[in-house]
Length: 457
Image 1: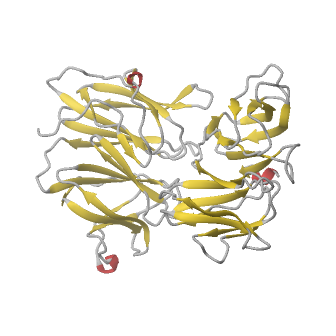
Image 2: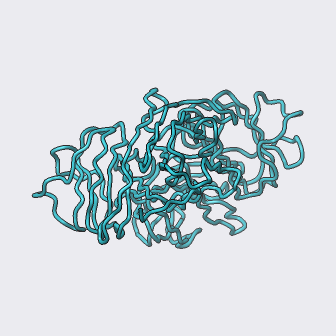
Image 3: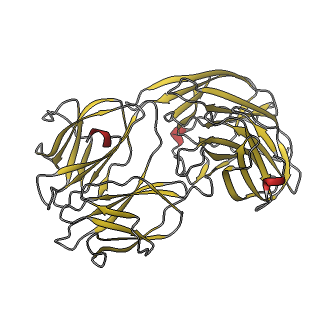
């Protein structure tokens, strides 16, 4: 056999970021070179499931695997394994959500894909088994899995870049949970397009992708939880790496929040345009997400009454394909200190938890501690976040669903500056809170509520 695979579990991720290299996250099932060996890979393709741990015969195989992440191919003894997938809940506990028995045979590769949904109780393991075989020089091997439950029968076209598919037959067709055979194709540049069965209207377009010489690809069409209108994204697993391919037309999602208490209504202009992308945005107002092309842009914020009065002048932003962002105008007009603050947003909904993001955007407020408690009494409570300065966000916090009180106190004290704010955080919900000055500037401070909080205002 020409191919030997790394025992390390942590793949280098493009777009999604890398997993931890902490050695405590990895337990190698077989360090010796056995006479008979198999290879196992696990893919997390359930879009509303939390991070998971995976065990085999009680030994940790993978830890903290998030959606759209996969292991490398892992070398194991050819044997029978009881595989369990444990969901990591927001309170730090785990609950087994899937289990299966895997009988591995020598010189075989097995991929276990967690797909379906948690909320509708359709979560399951899909097993794909392939013999270990060499790939001819000059060729790549490709296998395709349909892993998007909301999408039915589709046609998949794998063509030279730019080919017109209107007169072509599909390369293959697949329904949910179908996987193709392993296909041998010449190495080179290709374009992958997906349509509904019998249609030529493209619902996913990869753009130009390179298939490497003697490379081995498992391509899973998974639910799109990123930007754009396509129902799917492509997760590409190789023996020792993985890549996420968003639809080439996905762009990026951007919303704007007016958080300057002493500024009037403003217009937001993109790339020097004369017509506002956002018109008459008032203090504490939040736009919906606007889809814009990936790549470099400029954002200009001007007074609505007179666009020649510019408070943010052509601030550069460079959103990445598939990502979502919030652009806050923060600071003080009086002090001539208005500036943009652009934060990446996590918009994937998880059935077992709420997601909460808190931002300190109150220009006049000192560093703060943020409390998330069962009642308004914080006298004995420990803050969830401490010493948060102006322009700092918590990032997306996983919170157990329930009723809470949010209190913001001056750092190191129990002096509540904002709140108490009683909130209900529901499973699958996304919630944003930005602390702001009072209208006109200074105390008493208030909040801007975003995402699923909007209906509560």
